[in-house]
Image 1 (cartoon, rainbow, N blue to C red):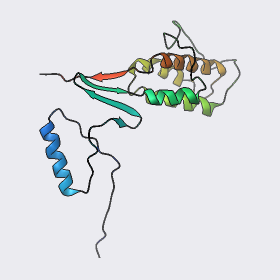
Image 2: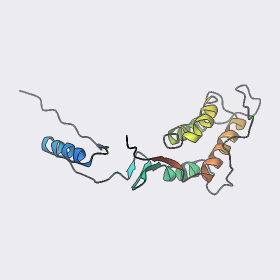
Image 3: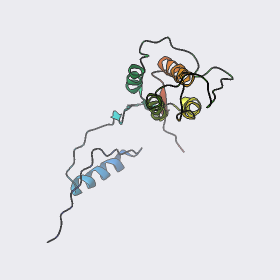
Image 4: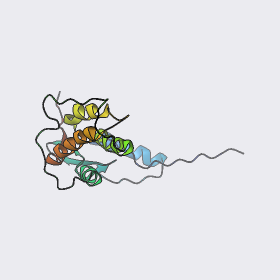
Length: 164
């Protein structure tokens, strides 16, 4: 007796500048599989997608709001830069230790945010170096970074079409 194999895909995202090619692909998929067309993408894995005439914008403002709540920084005073100039942290800090799981969780949230916020890459990479034994000094740097994110909550990436 042959085994029947079944599988289910939660979401398949199709992207192309050729609408006819998208339609052809969807028809072929519908011929082969039972599927539903949910229309234009607007939200995917915590990333908000806005498709407009000038291009596609990706941002994570709702995700940022959840991070700010988690960090206890909702409604905080925002800052203009993610880090102070010439800022230095040390792995062997003499400051009191903090809960490493909490620190790692906040930094992990910031690392996911880099998907739509490349301006945060250096700062998030920097605070990521201290996940082994974080102190309250390291947490203060993460909180400063979050206060910058609060100021720039609606920033994201804009992708425009390019004619060649």
